[in-house]
Length: 420
Image (cartoon, rainbow, N blue to C red):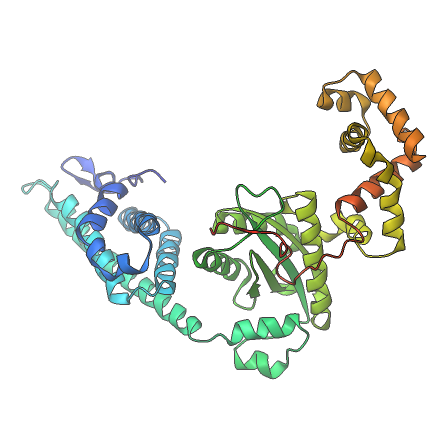
């Protein structure tokens, strides 16, 4: 939204629509930061940069709510934003009275800003209506904040849900455990694996996810999938168990986009469906696919069926060793190996390959013939293309290498990246 809230006018003050006279969000947030927050319990709990952003978001939500009350517009979204902000602060350990004082200070600043523009002799009715609106504003803010804070405190005091998630993923959950934490075990789940990727990540490093990122992702999952969705965090990853009746797989791409927005970073994600007793196997499978995405340097959402061939080729066995051996002779010819990768990535289009490599198409033909001579597989025929592609996938995934994949942390063997 813009820095100041603009909506359809319903009353005027000093000849100007009242809603257009609301102060800029930056003005109020700046005054709160300089006059109040720096001396309150907020600043001791929340990093200054995060606090400045949080205060601005809260002020904008309150201004949107004020504009909605002045014009009769829908106030659902700004109230939701206020609850989210309170929940964030509650998770940081900010006392409720500190939140109340910050919001009250901002509300009074906005109210005084409007009254200062009134014409004493002409705007009696407008002043009375503005006063009524701000009484209603204060009431709604108090209710929304109290609800959000109490809900978060109730949730934070019980870690049994996380215990249940771990037990389900290990195949050890019981109905009694679920009842104890108010969760109804579903007959089937969508099992998601999500990795959070640092901006500088080239596909090999893991990242340590900050507590704020974890909270934002948890809140997003709860909002999109309900409180029956379960989540367990690894190092740089999350495993989600979403009841099948709480999630539409056709909306998976949009769901991942919301996770990206919540995490403020790129993600890799994949999912499969599983029955209750099939969750442990499904968890192993999705994290194996997540590791494949890391090795192939793919971001975003990849459905399991999209990488089923790569998944199968990544399984240990004689077939994988045989496939990788097919292209081993090209190790001594890196230019040919580069040409083969470019050729396969362009759907075997020689002209496109030539453009990518900045060479003449005849040079591409010569190199493809050399690949056929060295490997015995002709990249100009469908059978040779299929075998060469499979061999390169197996080689990229390191089939046969002794590399452990820790559940919830497919980037285990790499050095840690900077936290979010």
